Image (cartoon, rainbow, N blue to C red; front, side, top):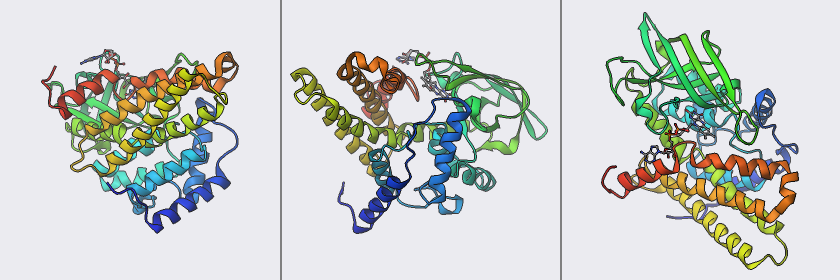
Length: 373
Ligand SMILES: Cc1cc2nc3c(=O)[nH]c(=O)nc-3n(C[C@H](O)[C@H](O)[C@H](O)COP(=O)(O)OP(=O)(O)OC[C@H]3O[C@@H](n4cnc5c(N)ncnc54)[C@H](O)[C@@H]3O)c2cc1C
């Protein structure tokens, strides 16, 4: 793997750094609701206006059409500049719904949705998990029957992040009632304003409502909103999960290196040896995660399962770093809302996008070739 940058890459890095220095908002983002949406979409619209959104997206659909390497350079500069967290309400649209449409959508779907996503004009959420189908996604039961040229959907999803403020949802449903498990599912674009949809926000332990239950009561979705073929939704969903686990969190992964440097700066001039040891270990682990992030771009042949390695490492490292931040800040942390919020939110890292146990199963079975459970 070659990690030397060309003069053109360095020019790109300098341009990104300069633009970020003059444009990163001073105020932090609200955590939820319409205010969070306005903040995130304003920021994305500003990035897009100046050519800093959709770095690796096709130019025909509003992106820059640059290499994945340039995308990582952008993220490295982005986190260095302490720009707004990439894990906001634009995350699903930009990082897995959009890439799924690029990979599997029709020309019409791409032409309509991608320019809206990349410019902050539409927010997406994900409707995969159900009350009885999370890790075992293939057991899902939200279903649709075909009525002319529409699907009529009934059922319930849960944990759908930002569903309360989203315009569209990547919705995985059973479209063949005789089917079992992976067969007979479809991945459809659901308009969140369609009649029959009820969204009920759920508060997490950090006191924030950024995910929700979604109920579907005879919701009519045009058949033209199916992405991929009807009853071929499992393949499309695996494409989505591939992005979600592999490239979507790139900005978050790189952000951990910055967090560790901030903590080192914050620790006492002579931290206790136990704290110094933890800081050193976590700094090394953050550097290893950065190397893994780069490696996922170049590994040939790439597999959807590589993402599990990175996702798992990221999730556990994030928890350790936020825990250490609380220890270093001591009781003062309770007076500072952001570190406490980040610490509490980090608990969900080993659940969202597939739990740590599921990632370990995938690594064991699909990468190491161990016997299936
Ligand atoms: C912050 C956050 C955001 C989320 N956002 C979304 C979203 O936008 N859209 C969406 O669709 N979903 C979302 N989810 C849901 C997430 O994908 C599920 O929570 C996750 O897949 C686990 O499913 P579950 O909660 O049903 O747990 P379960 O599958 O019921 O698992 C319960 C426990 O059993 C363990 N377990 C289950 N099966 C096995 C096994 N085979 N081997 C070993 N252990 C096992 C799990 O690891 C876990 O510890 C989000 C979750 C969180 C925390």
